[in-house]
Image (cartoon, rainbow, N blue to C red; front, side, top):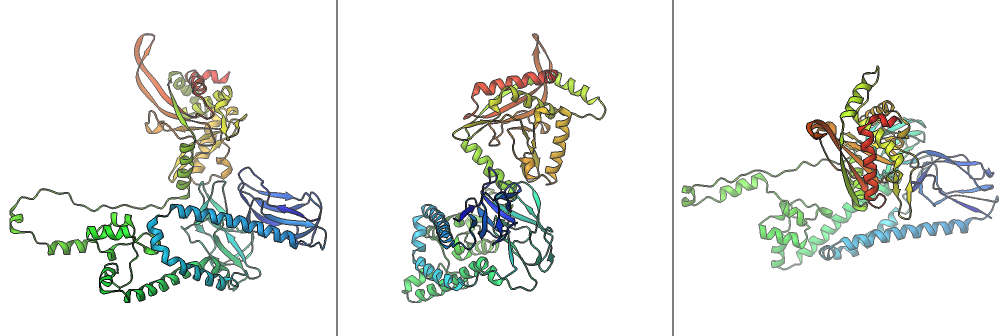
Length: 576
């Protein structure tokens, strides 16, 4: 009996896999334990072995293609066995899943749309349905991929990557490409990484230009034999825009015919919603009313809605052109009495904004920190540490040859040892369970031009302060040069963020999930302190612990800070 092999989940965060290479081909004999294929996950490329023996009857995912976890990967059975029923069943199951996702998407869009939009677009729905039937008929025979042509899609280069930006193309259209050569440098949400080709041939098409962004699995490039016509391949992804343009033209022509049959009064009203060329201006009823109330010509307003449709925010943000304002000023001459009166000063200026395209890193920071802040109940504990002994110890350590230790290194070391005594702080919330890590991996927040990255010091409790300092310096340098690898930013169990070098004395941080806590370190401040009943000059530093109340109770966090303070005020105890 034939056995169905599905795309395996080879890592805890894997959602889909890419077949890098098939080591068995259709018709080959397969023994139990043989390597079937090399599968690229979100973290590494791994070998996938067969748990069955027989003949490889079907390959469901071609080399270079991606498929979600649990989708049909291959079928193994007896030679000559009929598998048509299995394929039909699997295809129908995938089609149902696809339809379900589309239905969910449509329902969300319908819930989010307003009654106003429904009214405006009601007349267009019948046209769109007819045209979509025609389009499906036209495209049915156009999407076949020519022999030898491979479609390269935007890869998932990190566990959190949802879209990528092409920083540089190292190959151009028409260039020869060998398997293993670097095609492009792709900016992910964490770093800029080189992307190599799994195929050889000629680069026939570039789907994402330098500086542009595309979602994972979007068409990145097409590779194949020189001179191959790939227009049919691209038509499936590129023709939608042409069809949309064609639909808009047909719709405009139909609207213009309907307008000719209207009464004189309706023609007068419609003329107010036409631009200088006579084309109809699409606007929501609310936008039309607001424009009428404010005396704004809709023909001068640039719409931000679908098909250039003018909506409420376009009217609210509308700024008249300078030439219109000057012409209006000339036509409206002040009365003689107004000229003689003293005018009060009214500030005048132009409101403007500069739009900066968000990088993948900035989008990920917004998403991850938003999820953390709105799902984890944060609370904060602050303690002030006497740094006199720490300053003296650091001075003595740095007096040694080839030795350099920072206060941040001392804080990381103290945190790592304190976590040994308070393992509950070194935990993760998973819903049904709380995972308490037996290892101590400390993430160190590093500021870069695009935002913030958190490289990880693995087994930080086993490192000396000099080793911590060397590793932090190396990782920070990689982060600023965009050379950090995804594996160097994964697996933290606790995080330290230090803004003391900027003169910040105290602040709170957002927890870097799935961690349960993050330590915010301020600057060392020289201030009057009470010592043995006398006011003397002292040096203190404030540290604030942000905790997830689902895993770390207030008393647990307070005891952790108490231990941390003891280590920092007496650094020699860290050696015990």
